[in-house]
Image (cartoon, rainbow, N blue to C red; front, side, top):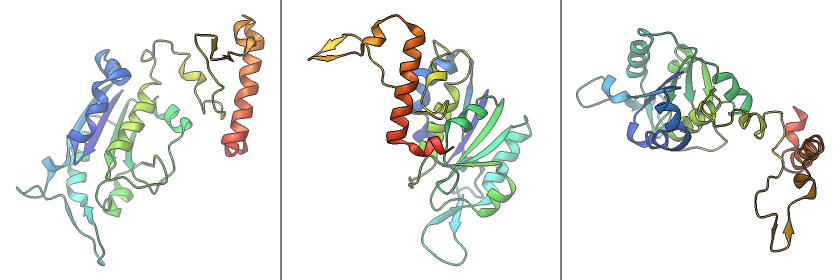
Amino acid sequence: MRIDIITVSPELIKSPFEHSIIKRAIDKNLVEVHFHDLRKYALNKYGKIDDYQFGGGAGMVLMIEPIDKCITALKSEREYDEVIYMTPDAKTLNQKTANKLSLSKNIIILCGHYKGVDQRVRDLLITKEISIGDYVLSGGELGAAVLCDSIIRLIPGVLGDETSALTDSFQDNLLSPPVYTRPSNYKDLEVPEILLSGNFPEIEKWRTKKALERTKKIRPDLLED
């Protein structure tokens, strides 16, 4: 997989890709991640990429021309499955979306900034819009990092045990059940006996029951889906 990230702050987003699971995936050549500074496609030598919004109002807007130039340059080299815009006014990222995107070969992620992008960017260039929650950040960089992490960890070979991702929360519209490790007794708090029994069919029944109970209590909306 190849991921191209377009941003006005490449230094802000690079750090998450230099550590842990994502770094190992890159080192193993399971994924390529490239950062593109939008200012390299600026309209003038002063790095102009934004302007005041028509109709008045506070906040600068990213202009369509630099974004169009960057995306056009990328598309001239390869085909892309999706061109994604990170924005709070979009459908919220979920596991189903991450699963689907993990099967892509090439994707572009455009990070919003300031007041957002000229609407014509969204009308003409974007194929999918994603939010990471009902709140506003200073830019789309952190959201893009979250999206990439959710996708990359699903690529075969990235996790040490590929079945691990299949038992995560939301994979089956349930939250994960409680998990425990050693010691089996800590300050009189004991691990449930069933988990120490070695009876794996019964353990799976227990886990399913607990996952359902936790989902009903914390996220009943998932069961409606």
